[in-house]
Amino acid sequence: MLVIVENHSLPRTAAFFDLDKTVIAKSSTLAFSKSFYQGGLINRRAVLRTAYAQFVYLLGGADHDQMERMREYLSALCRGWNVQQVREIVAETLHDLIDPLIYDEAASLIEEHHAAGRDVVIVSTSGAEVVEPIGAILGADHVVATRMVVEDGRYTGEIEYYAYADTKAKAVAELAETEGYDLSRCYAYSDSATDIPMLESVGHPYAVNPDRALRREAIAREWPVLTFSRPVRLRQRIPAMPSRPVLAVAAGMAAVATAGLVWYVSRRRRPVMS
Image 1 (tube, rainbow, N blue to C red):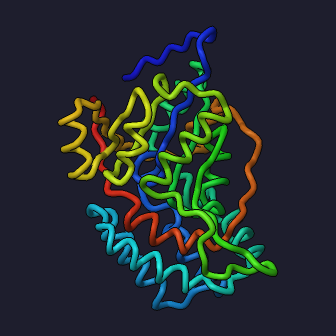
Image 2: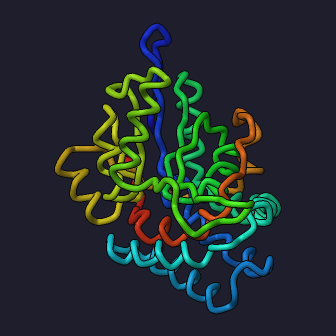
């Protein structure tokens, strides 16, 4: 069990969390594929494809090239989607789909960091329309997520900002500058080797449910390795978690576009509490 103590006379600090397979047990965006199908946004073939993608993701993820192919597929798939409809689908099904997936260990860590006076930041390759509402129910202070281009209320299929690999580390550095965080005293958690740039940018990196590549790196660098394995319904275990302002459920498209990204490349992670 981590014991986190913060001296409030020192510079501000934060804890940066990857989302999929670090805070929640599955791909956040792929979890909504059935809801998108029921809402008429995708067909049955797409549902089956995303189900297979989720299966592959849970087995260990995909390499960079596979992730790029899935990203392109999902970007094309969501082209023309109505943003408001996506927001409504996510809002209506968020608790039923995501509540059971939150790792109890991650929720406890978030509580500990907040109690120690640190901000909590979710940094995810998944789409903003999915990550922002999840961040809100977790009590996150900030969210960094992939954003899709929107014109006339619909997704164009283009990506405005892709929160992946080096761009995550850059976003962390920019947020640290604007918020006054001392990165040498900050924490970061991820399951994927693609997040090594983010992990090495802070003074306290942790590998959570790491994929093989991240586990090797963590061992070589003597980074702590944590195993999260107890998903729990948020409604049951978080009555005490701080209720942060609800973040806008924007950028609908990213959900699926990032879905594939998210789970595919997003992460190859695997837990162990050390």
